[in-house]
Amino acid sequence: MEKRIFYHDTDAGGIVYYGNYLKYLEEARTEFLEKRGMSVEMFHERGMLYAVRKCNVTYRSPARYGDTIVCGAKLTKVTAAQLIFEQKIHHKKTGQLMIESEVTLACLNKDFKPTQIPEDLKEKLLA
Image (cartoon, rainbow, N blue to C red; front, side):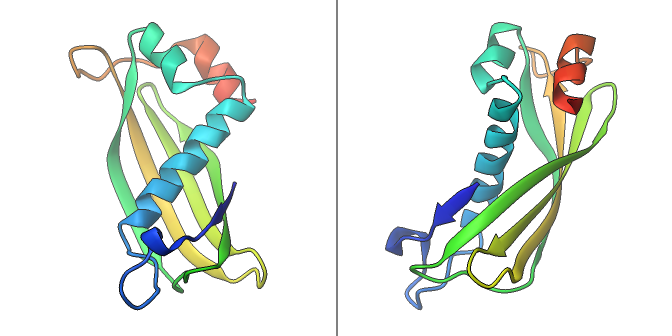
C-alpha cells in the first residue's frame, strides 16, 4: 500500500509523528484482508473482531512531509486465535527501510473473549 505523507501526518519539524505509523500499519493489514476478499465488516457479521495484542516497532528512518511510503503486511503465523504479521515500511523513491514491526492480533468474540479463528477464514488468510 502506498501512502503519501501530508502535513497533518507530521510534527512541527516536518517529520512523521511516531504514533501515525501505527495507523499506516493498520491500513496495510486492511489492504491485506481486502486482497483476499475479506473485510472488517465480514468479521463483525460473523461475531468476531480482532484486537492488537502486541506490537513491536523498530523505527529505522523518519518519513517526512511530501514523501511517499510503501507499507507492507505479511502474515507469518496463524494460531488457533491469533494472527501474527511482519510489517515493513519503505521509502518509495529510495527503497530505504523506515519501519519494521511485528503485530499480533487476537481474535475475540462479541464479549471480548478469545475465540478460535474459523477454518474457512484461516484458508483465505493463508491463500
